Image (cartoon, rainbow, N blue to C red; front, side, top):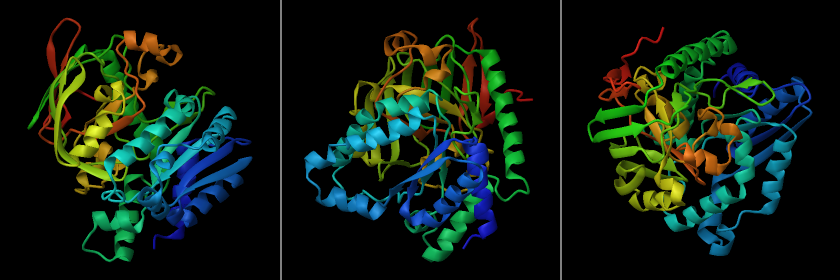
Length: 412
């Protein structure tokens, strides 16, 4: 097993850099029951740092599967009001939210995709208010991952379950810089690198991006006043936090009505416990008008049919191929990791904070600026070492942004 000292460092990093926990603040942790030992370390560290309360919402893959296999449709399609009130209460109190992920990528592979879609839609509709707190950076929140046996075996199928978990721990701790002497300082340096990249892109203020790679030929307009973000974010209280750990991306908002062409996936997408792989989407005036997938096509269809906004894009993220996650050579079947190995886009809701003044706008105003709204926000990977991206400037000139999967711009 991973050394206890490294788990302690990971827990500290999560609280100090992930959510930047403040004395007297509450913490809500969503965690897998299989990761109880690590979750208890996070809870203990939180109290040691002055948290006034630590609440754990446990998730159990086996119980989740049992419910999908046995519960009637009316139960599957219902999200309990008490869960909504629980999340809203902590959000209203300004709590820090820690999400610890380790779901089995194949958990729901044999479940009717329509049942999964009903459950996902019910949860998304019920949690609209809570999502405003996170997607508008009103409270500090972060997502991290720890190994589970099923997930580890998916990545390292030739190893025993114990060895696979140990191997995945090693990869995770290296990727999130916990193996370094001072992980917090290492993240401060990394965040500065991402700040530099987003400053360069914000200064460019491209009107359009053009993506070309095998299976991809896509033109993407960017709204006037779009903002590139990446790395750390700032909550309403002024507290700096890191929503994703790891993160290697700088990201912004596409114009929901200004996307045309075809884009192909370069890594599998784990959506709701099912895999969608080798798929492509064709856009016209911002909307998906055609799609296909070698695996999980029915799941993809249900995702696209979640609501009107699910067929439009809410995010564009640029990640160079030299990302440590990409260089690991592994497919993690986990969006948090795979999206930070590759340029990616997201179907569904956009982050209002990616538009100047967007956090204060209502949905009608955001729509006028080309900012998408949806119940879903699902990232999928489109980048590779064969990806070229050109930026179109305000005066109509074209200049290289990416060549062969890496920056063509001077990022110093």
